[in-house]
Amino acid sequence: MQLGFVTALLPEADLEQIFATAAAYDYECIEVACWPPQGLDVKFGGTAHIDVTSITTEKVAEINRLVDKYNVHISALAYYPNPLSPDAEEAEVAQTHIRRVIAAAAELGIGQMNTFIGRDCKKSVEENWPRMLDTFGPLVEYAEQHQVKIGIENCPMLFNEGQWPGGWNLATTPAIWRKLFQDLPSPALGLNFDPSHLVWQQIDYLGAMKEFASRLFHVHAKDTRVDYSALKDVGIFALPTEWHADKLPGLGDVDWGAFFATLGNVGYRGPVCVEVEDATYEQTLEDKYLALKHSSHYLRNYIPRRDPAIPSPT
Image (cartoon, rainbow, N blue to C red):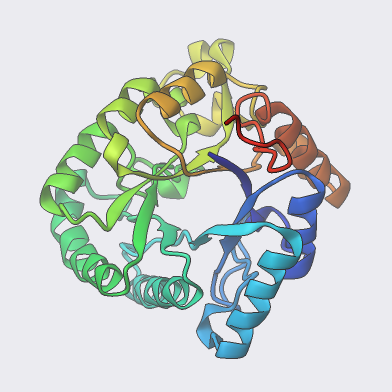
């Protein structure tokens, strides 16, 4: 496995600064944010460290130069919009840009892009399903043509009253994944698996990893802590933000020893990228760098770096 981080944390930095930061804090890879350059500047999004609207041979060469210079590779290109938004214009922008990100991943030889399925939060799963198939059937086919895999992150995207009750991401539970991969069985469609979102939904994240082992294309390392005293006060129908909080790895309820043991047992050998959404570490740029430093130090207990200087036994 390779340790990385999601670059959306650092909108202040340019791409070379991102690579330098990864190298300085002992990360082997980065998941690069690729929002539209003129897109909405939303929290943890709206960042374009690679502008996929204008990929040229020269830009590809420059990015590859940075990969070689810092010995840090790109695990995936990232863009997390709502392609099933009830706003037709927003949905069209999202779907068009997903195609651009897929094409850019192919141009760069990365082979992986990560996104959301999206959702109309006011409709049920069943009501969203036909539109989801009409939208992602062609997107998955486009990814197949470009030999790129799509990793769907499982965050419910349920943060405020306007997103109640469904949130704006459909693919959030094993029951939904089961149906998703049955109806869209392409090997180009899988998961960008984040255990933190399953913890607060009271879902067995270890069991989910075992069942969907063949669909684990990419992994996020983020923790979450459920405040059970608050939950007992407001109940499960309150907004989830009222009774849980995202945390750096090791500061929440994920059992990281069991998590990495299970990842290894199911045969996963790919990237594990830290996604910093811990409010304790988002006030200043120094806080963000501290979060990356802490997360790298902690997770190296589970993802030791291979040392090429040590010869293999003969």
